Length: 426
Ligand code: AMP
Ligand code: GLY
Image (cartoon, rainbow, N blue to C red; front, side, top):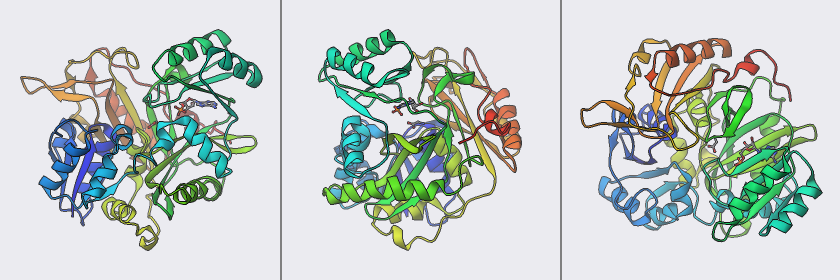
């Protein structure tokens, strides 16, 4: 089969890498892709950009795709999956209606309430007065979330009522601005990706993401600075529990409403003292968690995604997983998560091939006029390594990262460190 992958980040690079390794996949095209993806697959621009339904359909038709896999949230929310399916092409990715589980936090809360899914108490506010009341009702630490897509940067968690209010004011000042003020959920976070064809759900292996920019979770939230999988410290039965109490009820509720969710439901959880609570849903694979989850998936990816897209997940045999541990570390450009510096030359990314079981996935990279690899975004590279133990995977990933040169770049040194030391408990 021929697969078109929409997107240009390290998540899409990981997806393309797995598809290329699938013997049932004859050809992979990425749109628009990036220089790293171009080394293993064809890359094509999309007329009008990845969020243009007409552009993606035209490209999928032209390349003769049997399956379209949509990586990022923006095209999903823009209805690209609907358009691809309407053109008679199988699509892995939910409809615009179903992607509202990610696109609107208020909608997600409403569905969770209808499906009796455990999550934090929340107030939807459209005025500063409502925000003040909600902050006082829920108490510190305060959690204020913008009600819309914000690339992981729309959330402020703070002990300062003033900082919480300031973030809320900034969000409310935008057109149609609304914020969700939420109960603080205390406990380690887990990302669980659940594939669905609209009815059946198949969980992947859980991962943990590091959202804050600095070591020891210092500084602002980012799109994600690193991840690892599996989670040896997670309670036995966690995945089954999350499927039974969260993923299946949500998929059932979406189907009942006539807007079935087909694609990957990203369940972001806090494992609180009272059990798992949903922090957020996303309607797509997480980045950088996908890089470590797919590094361990032994079942060929293309067949599974196609089965989900065609409503045949029930027929897919149990997924097989490597017992190895995988760690990814994101190399970010200077000033990220603020406006990143771009155009700096990246060195050493090819030399990583010399490290055992390590590889580099590209995110914000480009080739300059002289054909040199340069930075072109906030998260530049996602370096991945596997090992028999978490310690071995960490050693390998940092050896690879240390061989990469990028002026002004930064990365976390403590990805998966607490887990390696046995200091994460749920
Ligand atoms: P979100 O955009 O909803 O994924 O939130 C981004 C990050 O903010 C999460 O991964 C958490 O680290 C943090 N966060 C969001 N909501 C809460 C909450 N209710 N309690 C504690 N931390 C939260
Ligand atoms: N890793 C967080 C996200 O993909 O939203």
